[in-house]
Length: 338
Image (cartoon, rainbow, N blue to C red):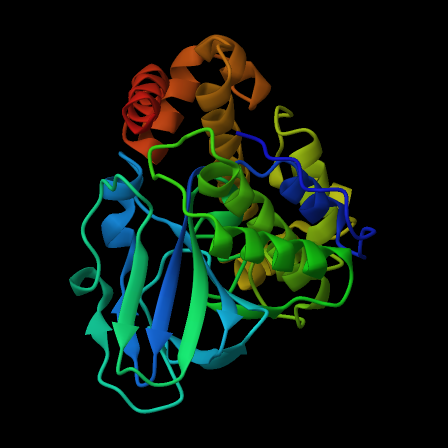
């Protein structure tokens, strides 16, 4: 499902390719619920273990916690620790293991011991802690097969904290939090703005705020979009994925030699130009299979394969299923989650 972002703050100086990715971002399986913690508290979460229970067939989740009141720290399994205060948003874009705690020392407990397992008749409110000062969170859980959340590309850090800048976006997110804190919505209400679309829109605004202020990085997709060699190469590959690209033609589009192109792809993106192109074509095929009734043959042509057979072989190597079986399984999964 493509979710249009609300028309709020003016566009920032984000690379065109990234703006396009955000505009066409597909999110689904959204859930919103609240947590009320009192000092001292600390809990550990492995969100991806709940992915299939929250959204049948999903392998990973996108998590964000809006700090509505109080403060906390968050650490990833990679050891980084960040502090977040009221108004900040904590994002775990790949559903990695993480720990959240308060100002006072506490031994972390597993979050699965604090909450009834799904399915829920009502969206849960999680209460935990030692009875001291309170911190409140609004928690969003979403699912996406979009390349922005592909752990292989690692567009984002495993965990990051967004301080929403003053302006319309920040006010809109605050109002959304206030709405969730006041309204308690049944979990089965698929038409509810709180239970479904609102978390998607909130995440979109948070990501835009993060990307507008994110520090420069040396590798990954964000680095590639700002790299003088890779940015024009990626722009051409994304503009015409159906073209029968060779390394020489990609290098010519970037106005560099083949050796320089290959070196930059491997240094920044950790893969060769052709491997990146193949992965991007598979992402495009995923979207067409999931959201349209276009034939497999037509999809093959759109993503650069001359025959349905060659496309099907490549897709099965990448996804473990033939295109038609993948499409059927995806639709059955969607039906089970409705």
